[in-house]
Amino acid sequence: MNHVVVVGAGLAGVRSVEALRGRGYEGGITLLGQERHRPYDRPPLSKAVLLGETDRTYVDVDLEAMEVDFRPGVAAKGLREGVVETTEGELPFDGLVIATGADPIRLPGDGPQHVLRTIDDALLLRATFVAGARVVVVGAGWIGAEVATAARRAGCAVTVVEAGRAPLAHAVAPEVGERIIPWYDGIDLRLGAMVSEVDEGGVRLTCGEFLDADVVVAGIGVRPAVEWLADADIDLHNGVVTDEHLRTSMPGVVAVGDCAAWWSRRYGRRLRVEHWDTALGAPEVAAAALLGQDEVYDPVPYFWSEQFGHMVQFAGDPQEARLLYRGEGEPKWTACWLTSDDRLAAILTVDRPRDLVQGRRIIEAGQHLDAALLADSQVPLRDCVV
Image (cartoon, rainbow, N blue to C red; front, side, top):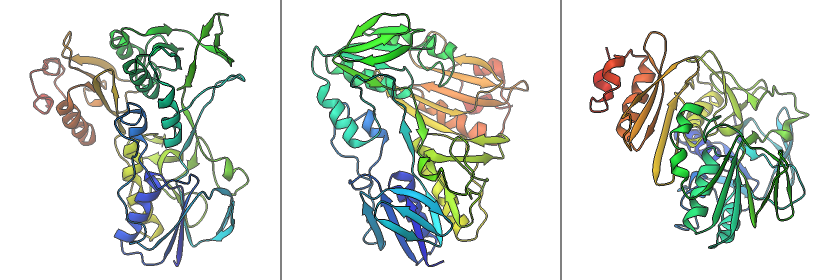
């Protein structure tokens, strides 16, 4: 293999480059980045950048030292075996890493709206957060909550519109989301409400009510950025379809990050996880696949959020599991999902990082817990294993 092309210069793309070099690959590498920026990290955009704590989130990587041909401002337009079609012409390859990430979903309507996906999005949105500005955030998921946190801290009059019965209802569970409703103190939280369209000067709800706004932010999710592959002979279904080695249906091509829908042996189905931990870990397995090795990518999904002064962390898959709590009535608490045979399926922690670390290990090991002990927040999770 003489030349690898990596499409996408986010964290997943950069880590793919590092993994290839770390495994001894000495051939040519071309890294395409649709944006004109140096590679940067996205999680701080909705946290430190939006809060005004930093303007830059560059990934600490020396592409020149790794002899990488980095091409910022170049986008992929199409793919056929052995060739990527780009905005600057055709680019042949022996191996290809698809790391094009995801694009934010926008609300219907012709009125102005913001999304948060790039550093430019974050800086533009931050500039609108001035004291007294009327900000409507649509969606009370992870991104919506973090945007609302920054807007409230800036002194804006914030309204959050959420279709579910509670924040994080779709991301985790309505019962858990109901416990964080008090965090929205000082915010006009509209639950069970949907936006029909964004108009000039605000948003119209499906019930007919019009909410005046100086700033409208859509935080209703993302779609895998795979439109450029529409005519390619490669399997697509909710992203780029891969096996457990992150190989796609096209020879010599792997996919990583937000755009990859990989087969999980652990869960017996295909997963696509839009979080930093996936972009960090998957590239090692993808690089191994390109180099003819058969490593398996099968993590316990993990992500985190900083909102309203709380650190929220989540790991696992709560499907078909019952919910128990640690720290009932306490400001720091943990939600645990247990299977019918009392194995820990998933865990969400609020300001309890030790529970998260121990719980993630328990999930990975498939261990059983004593449900009675589990409810006592003073008992370490690891001591609940039976």
